[in-house]
Image (cartoon, rainbow, N blue to C red; front, side, top):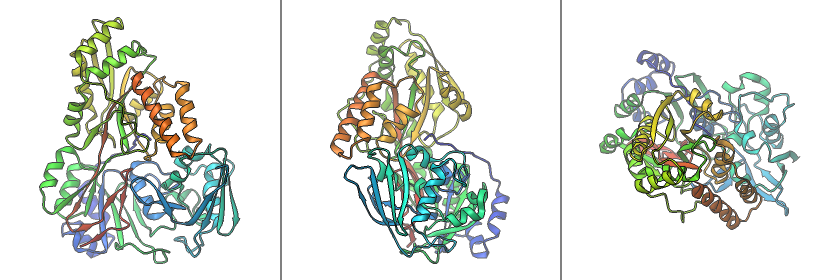
Length: 524
């Protein structure tokens, strides 16, 4: 999914007013006294806010952190490889033909509104997204649940109060992995019926935290749920504070106004690393920053021209310059941390003379004009998109190509890419660390570059249609080899997910998708 964010400047006085409602103890923490002294309150500063708190309709960057604290799914991720274990389901089984999954549900679980979690709640959750005629359908503008599983699930049926059955249209190998993702978390049917279109700001799940207050573009606060079925986290209250400016976020961490900041810039890394009272948290990101090459825009339909572009650029130096140690060079369309990554592929070497030879062979010894489109602001996968584009342009000039860098606001940028009105455009992708989400969702469905060979569709279909991990790996590795040989896209980098936390904070975690997870966090 392409990262989306809305950034609004928040003046200091509005911060003071926003937090005054929480009482003297927290007011002191927010206004300058060390936040760590309040062992029951944890404050995270982030650049963006949520748009909806309805987990089945959430997809913006500022929403997903919250979902893992308010809601739960039938299964949960138990490690950074996205293996799953029990959550609201205690056990599950798959039919012999691989198309029917049966989940035994946990008994005695309550939603935040006091109603019982059961099979009917699971059916309600899925049907309101997957059935267009459901009375509570269309409560958001785009559903990641529908995107991932809308064409996969044929039926969700309650067998009894605590048994639910999912019938799939076909074998779908990522199914169990996807079930651990926030978009498949279970909601309270009673709350949806009570709040209707206002449910998006009155979320009710079974998670360890329940909603307290949401002040749009200022803060969201949540408190421990007294009747939570499992062991409760140590932190009594979490405040997700919106601080759009990265420098202000860093200052608030250094002065003790917040306990953690999400996403640090490369230029902040050295300063924060040198501070003995601050710890850096890093996670190799399941994302990619890449150049989308329009194969129908002359002369980029010629594989020799595309390969010339790859040889013309020193990607190692580009990544070193732009990411400053907080990213790694991309070779394939998916990160090396994802299952099925083809580590036998040798990246295109920086060889400007070979680039010139290829251009001459393709009939462009004197180069050609090339528009390079890039974003004006930082995204999840790139902190300095303009710098990256300018560096690429300098390398291309050195082999005779005449590039022009065009800087676009996000809406304009993605609109021109979607309409194929470009030659080379830099964008990115971040998603669940499953190969299907990069090799199919990105390369074949998400990328508008006029490159959709049938052999890739066939390999993707075969990978999804088997639960044999060795076969899946074989198909995905073959897909990457084809894409590499065709130079169908320009992989650039994988951005690390980062956070910085106060020195007395223990077990602050970022997951492989970059989400802040505070369920095991506590103060020393």
